Image (tube, rainbow, N blue to C red; front, side, top):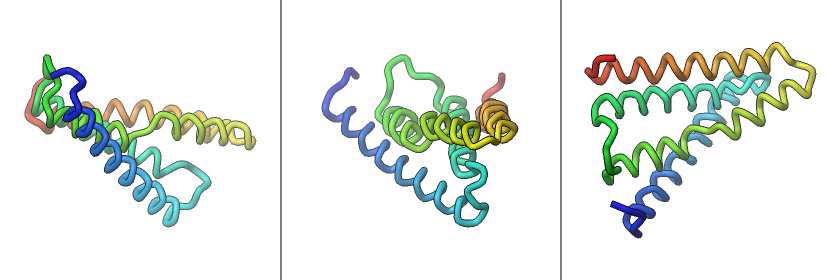
Length: 128
């Protein structure tokens, strides 16, 4: 497939939609749950991991990325999930004198992400 213009546009469109989704979910959860803990980032990363696991189980890992894979996994989920926000928010918790919350965020993100990607995989009908 290569890096043709069509593939670049698919990733860009997916990334734009994913970024808007992340922004909406993060702000919604911050509004309802407060900003003392990054619930929105945790939610988008967990739900993104679930969807990625489901797509991997349903579609398999392509030897050459299809248009669907590029749009959904690379673009949409790449824009929706975020390591940079997770990292910055964890550092902010640490620097503001909340090391227990920083550690909780790190552990919750890693463990929940692995659990959700596995759950998505299993619910897709694939076997481990």
